[in-house]
Length: 252
Image (cartoon, helix red, strand yellow):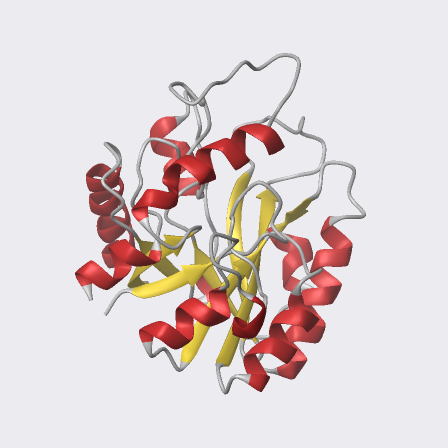
């Protein structure tokens, strides 16, 4: 089964979904992850954010609606701190909490990362916070070291994740690179005896919400050096309308 992996508006620019209680969802307004989960009959919900700011709201809301929360954060990892922020060895990892002690460790990791000028962590420093009993390492489908090695010029990040026993997410959002990345990940996981898991990143409820998502992405990604419009947003993830719950329901 494919795991739906949600992200809320607390990850600014990444999702148009909220953590509002179903009773506060207004017709024509923003959709709630809790409301979506209840409508789909989910008992367990995976929420991966770029920040810890929404954790307590998510925890309270999920408990009030008898939903089990699996919470994690997506952070930057690098080989060393002397590199420039845009160096190709920087890639994304996801750390999930298995229990309350894991949440405490997430807060420590998040605080450490955001004390770095470029908001990164090395594998060596990650180990100082790590416990396989409390945390789980996930390698995301997009922006991982494998993704960087295959789609960034001259990228060559070498992993040493064996002690973490990571799980590699595999997605299919009908993007041109998805089929290639699936093959790369499956080969790598098989060679290194790592597990894979089908996943679906969910940033909005239905395909019809894609235009609203594009608009939101452009507003939150504005800069003087980057021009974007609804036809050419120039933003990752805006070439497919499959990052939604409707797509997950169609396949499950």
